[in-house]
Picture 1: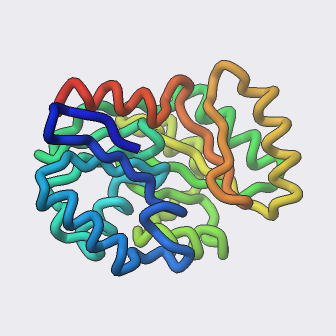
Picture 2 (picture 1 turned 30 degrees about the vertical axis):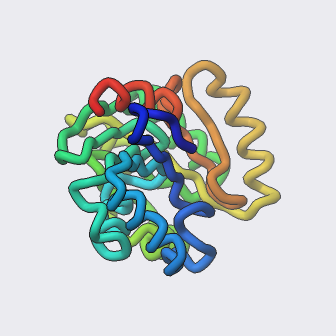
Length: 215
């Protein structure tokens, strides 16, 4: 995706998983060189993902180091926006009561759940799902006794909740969740076994509108 900034400069917007990152969660040499050329020509680069900011930053620092301090980063599907100066431009989390309701909903259905608060990956289950997800995201996870208590007592908003289970069951969970949380939560499938619960009104498109005022 790109749009004109002026007659000679363009803004290029890239998603991560399935776009910049291949199936092995790596950057191909061809993609690496293409991004490098965009920077060399002075184009603006925006990286967008449902991933947490810490995960995106790890990928930039380790796989695309020339973009550190150059690319703007939109994480959590638009819920957390950091410009290329490292300034937080926007942050929006789930309503606290809605986030708690969501955790209890996933518990009742026996679905793995974890949350993102203050850009930390937090789980109440030390299961294979969180271990695999931690590896996928390149971010260590934190264990707590009770996610509901964690949400209640946190000074920071819950940026996102993720439910993980096998695909067939997740189809049912998604259907129930969309009815239960209509108008309260944005719900989307990021992978066949991942169900994202995000603040209502948050999207990558809205994030680009906010970021366009800064670049």
